Amino acid sequence: MAQTAQYGKGREYWDKRYEDDPEPFDWYQRYDSLKELINTFCPQTQGARTLIVGCGNSTLSEDMFNDGYKAIVNCDISPVVIEHMRTLQPHMEWKVLDVTNLDTVENATFDYILDKGTLDAILCGEGSFENAEKMMKEMSRILKPGGCFMEITYGAPKYRMGYLEHDQYKWTITRKTLEKPGAEAEEDKKDVHYVYCMNKNES
Image (tube, rainbow, N blue to C red):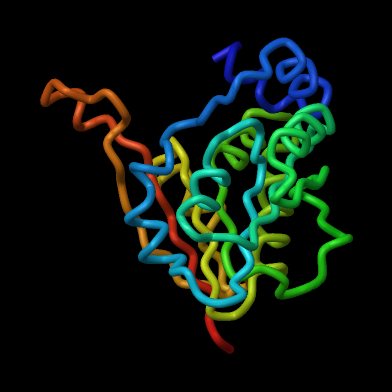
């Protein structure tokens, strides 16, 4: 519990983490296991723009880019990791942003938004309920009508739907599960990650 609490400490913690360990790391699931869900809920269409929040040094956006998703914006609270990733992958956009306050991003900017673990990190920190609500309001605001916000998390519905399911967000939620990587024994296969696909209503 003490270890996970570190994740909610904000920019200073993440800057130090990425300075100490700049090697690529993917939380929860890699693109190959997410690809079918992403292709289903976030189909490739001409001009569609995708935002990866809390991108860190994950390979997710690079794998998506190589698979045909070209208009990708990556954002993270850590300037250290954004500068590092911008140097490695200059063909994509990299921005230092706080998902609880995206005042530099206009309404209905993105067709697709993907998060792997940012909400979970926020829920480990102080003011978790308020900050999670701020994040969800911003996700709804910058998501285009007809678009999809995909949240990948370790949080089961009874722990996450209270944050995700509100009329003001104007989206419909589809819930999916994915086996955790490396699950081989039958009892391990019951241990899953949860994927919440929020489709923004057209009106």
